[in-house]
Image 1 (tube, helix red, strand yellow):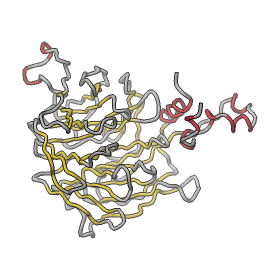
Image 2 (image 1 turned 120 degrees about the vertical axis):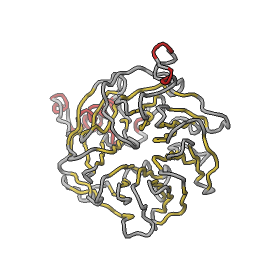
Image 3 (image 1 turned 135 degrees about the horizontal axis):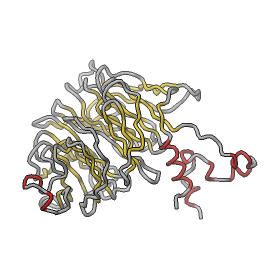
Image 4 (image 1 turned 90 degrees about the horizontal axis):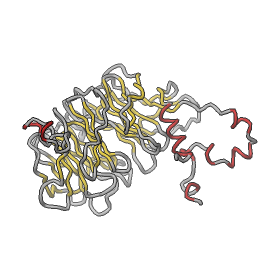
Length: 387
């Protein structure tokens, strides 16, 4: 049985549409590669562009008017001496505090920024382009940043000491995406151009826990070169589900696969052709707070929305004028933000819900008392815990 909150969230996700009343300040002069919404307040969004520029937006609607613009509150622009020299590939807020964020770039650096001063507190330098980095969303015992570069070795950098403390060896080509599990703070997934996805326990000095195998060990289905591969092409996208029980991967074989993250088993959900021509990391996302869950994947100038467990293509979100490069789900309001090569960030918002006949017949007092009629985004955290 779905609880009322989860069902309302599901309805909201299914009704997502481009919001003509909400704009996001247009600051980037080049394509937008990456966006991230902080989890502390759910209020501030980062974006990183192909021009090296980083922007912070305030998503709050202060005007209380229907039509408003999410304002850029600060920018690390081309005129800043600290700006990345080349394309910014990943931006991420520090999970517990909006006073810090991390960016990485094709200028072979990863920078840890002080949000107040917009100056780097730490700069890590690498041998090659940095495709992806990720801080654990839940870790309290470590402050490791996993980093994927043109080097087949995954680098683990310690935020506290400012040093590179460990490398994970096993891949044979560049590392296009890295993701920590949102369930276990020591579990890391990595995706490479060698067609493989490896899952690691970073507490162990030895190799990976397992390598994902699209054929689930059936040697008769795999050619000798395809044994223990996740895709028949470069693997450039990784995303855990919100509960960490499943891992999604995307590859340049135009396939998306869903894996049991504990066993590494391919669930064999068929999403059909999932177009993917990206030479770099593909930033896609999964809904949270609703059941069933949905996957949002950039597909040309649209965003494809798939049902996670059935593989059904639910809808295509169209609004960008050029390729979509990234998308980020806002779980507090079941909203989606997307960035693209057209230099725009678009907001996709649930359509207002028309009242049911039954609801209209309720008295105002009953409606106020009925928790299921309250938008879950505005429910306090305690009311749902009461017996």
